[in-house]
Structures are given as structure tokens and as C-alpha cells.
Amino acid sequence: MGNVIDTLFGGGQKQAYEAYEDALKQAQEMQKQYLTQATGYVQPWQQAGLAALPQYQKGISAMEDPTAFYNKLMGGYTESPAAKLKLEEGIRASQAGASAAGMQGSGAQQKELMKYGQQVVGSDQQAWLDNLMRIYGGYLSGMGGLSFQGSQLGQQMGGWTYGTGQGLSGLQQGIGGARAGQELASSAGLTNLLTGGLGAMAGLGGIMPSLGGGFLGGFSQGYGGTTRPV
Image (cartoon, rainbow, N blue to C red; front, side):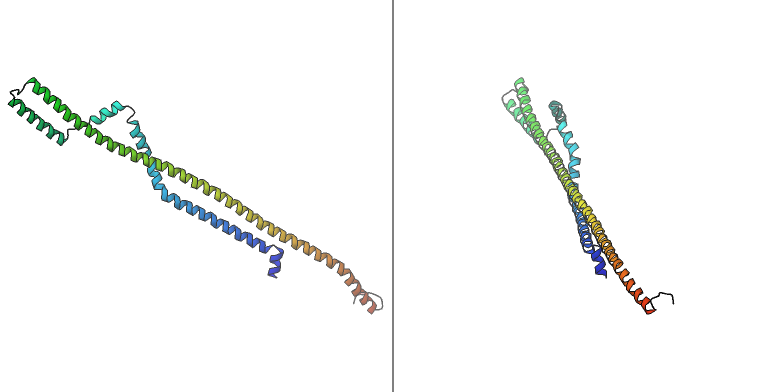
């Protein structure tokens, strides 16, 4: 009896659509789960890139005025121990030579010492500036790399989100179709049941008069052709 009712109400089709809806819902959950996992993997790097961007912009803007930038850097210069030692050794050598030549304290000696000191200090300042710019350049390169990485990952996450959204939308449409299929299956089964039932009732309507006529006719003949209550 159950199989007959299921058949009349489209039970097989409805179960198929229900199974299809369940599969689509599972696919939706899997897509959401994978997006969450993927986002969790790259989000720390993307956030690091976002944090590095203001630092990178600040470092670049600091060089907008090269003269001011140079003066600011050189304002922190201090003589290195190596330069100090070299300068002291040069002064001692100059004094010894000037003393031997009888030119100790002369203008020529002072001019030579000043020139030598400028060379030593200038070379030391250039080395100090080169080292500082190398460090500064590494900092800017690191901040720029992180910023670019954050930008790339942000775009990638946006693509993932967009793709997942499209996939979920398509699956949702499929779920709507599956539910519509369930309704159609139930509606078609009900229509079949009603059509079959009305047809059966119509058949019974044709049978009952003939049965009734025969039965009443026989009953009447049994009582001498008259019909009367018992």
C-alpha cells in the first residue's frame, strides 16, 4: 500500500530531489569551510602587508627633499674609532716630518694637516653614510615587499571570495530547483491520485444503477411483483 501511495504522490522523484538538495547543501558548507581555511592561512601575511604600507609610504616621503634628508642623516654622524686612530697617526707622522725638516708649526704643516684631516673625516663620513643608506634601503625594501605581498594576497582573497560567492549562488539556485522539483513531484502525484479517484467513482456510478436494478427487480419478483417493506 505504501508503495502505491508513494507512486501516486511521486515519492520516488521527490526523494531524488531531496537527496539532490542535501548534496547541494553539503557542497555549500564545504565551499564555506575551504574559504575560511584558506583565508586563515593568508590573513596574517595580508595584515602584515597592510601594517607595512604606512611605514613604506613614510620612508619614501622622507626623501622628498633630498637636501633635508641628507642633512638629517648627517646630523647623527659621529667619528668612528678607526678614523680617529688614523687621524692621530697622521698627525704624529706629520709632526715628526715637520720637526725633522725644521717646519714644526709652520703654515705649510698646518695646511697639510687640515687637508689630511678633511680626507680622513670625509672618507669616514662617506662610509658611515653608505652603511646607513644600505640599512635604510633594506628597510624600505622590506616594507615595500610586505606591502606588495599584502596587496597581492588581498587581491587573491578577493578573488577567492568572489568565486566562492558565485559558487554558493549557483548552488543556492540548484537548491531552489530541487525544492521546486519536490513540489512538482508532489503536485503531479496528487493530480494523478485525484484523476484516478474520479475515474473510479465514475465507473462505480455506472455499475451501481445496474446492480441496484437487478437486485430490486429480483426482490420484487420474489414477493409477487410488489415491493413492500418487511
